Amino acid sequence: MWGVSAGAAGQSVTMTAAAAAVTALMIAVVLPHADRRRVMLGLTLLAAVSNILVALAPSLPVLLAARVLLGIALAGFWAMAIAVAAHLVPADRLGRALTVVNTGVSTATVAAVPLGAWLGEVWGWRAVFVLGAGAAVLALVLQAATLPGIAAGAASGLRALGSTLRSGIVLLGLLAAFLISGGHFAGFTYIRPAAESLSGMDAAGIALMLLVFGIANFLGTLAAGPVADRSLRLGVILFPSVLGAGMLLMLITGGSAAGLFAAAALWGFGFGGVPTSLQTWGARTEPTRLEQIVGLLVVMFNAAIAAGAVIGGILVDGVSPAALLMVGGLSAVTGGLLIVCLRRTRR
Image (cartoon, rainbow, N blue to C red; front, side):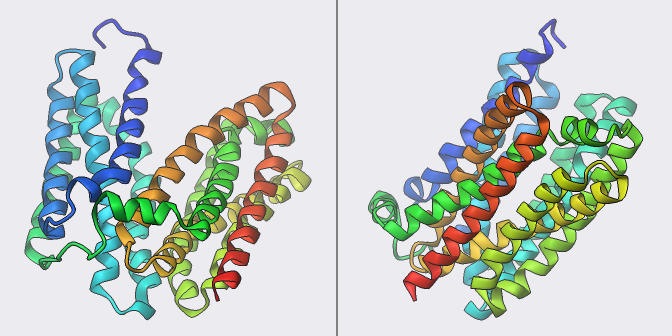
């Protein structure tokens, strides 16, 4: 593509993530009074425009600029969608509402990468981005037809963000979210070499294991909302603990195919419930600053992706693939214990 290396082209992911981190944190500051329905429609339209620009990009700089727009659209929509969902349902059904949002994300995550790769081989990569733009336009039409007008929260702007960041409970909760998500991504980024080193499983077996992970992840996402609504304390300790247990089980029993698949199922189920549990915790901890707390959680999640990949790479190269499973599993469990203690302290 335009004579650039795969590494240079891969920086499109870096640009998207960097734009997403800034946008998730600042969108409520930049648009403190705008109708949230209009903001979400505008962000969805921006996603469609970004995909079209990528499909038509004549050079790498244009593609990177278009991916910046996509990062803005995705992170802004993600931060707003959680807050909007909280406005549309009673407080005792917040977990279920977030499950609906996160189920869509989980399904897209599992399906989009293999589907996009296959269609890219059949139609070419530009056609895949045109298809993505079409999906964004469909989402735009559905939102325009169903989403009511939603006023901005009373607490908006830079002052609200600063007040949120001055809360000790929020800061420790963000640390817990970083430990849980970072532990997961430290292991998951390198799950293939870890599984291969433990079991000698071939490519077909690894693919089947990842399918098991994906199905379990979907089931965990479905379960998280009802659990969080019934007992938030249970949710914030259960799912990180199951995630960590899956990683540690893979380390202990990964020499057998059955043990590897059981570990992948536990790991996937646990991580599937993490986003909804953490978002529900954030919404109940800062109910008047929903957009700020969700934006901070999105930033922390993206930071955990980057840090987990770096730390996991150091462990897998410098120590052993098994070491990252131990470190990642213990990190996830520690984060769950920290956040459940914070919930108890707030009570």
